[in-house]
Length: 99
View (cartoon, helix red, strand yellow):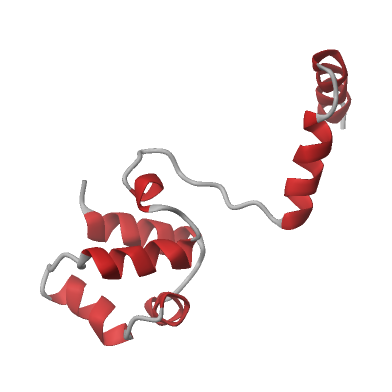
């Protein structure tokens, strides 16, 4: 896995510039830019800050699946769905597909 490519991919998925990633992670933009210019790998502590900015764990960073960030509203909807029976969940799914 190319760590720098993964950081770039996650950043672009969010439509963030390097500057925005720097702001959200608390790292200097010059540090992030230098990783790419010098083909250097971030330290573990820097990677932890990057992951925190993306709202993912380091474990999620190293998996091949893309993490999905849910809003609080989406979390509330999922909690309500989880309270339904399997049959009710299936009916809800069919109803949603009808739109």
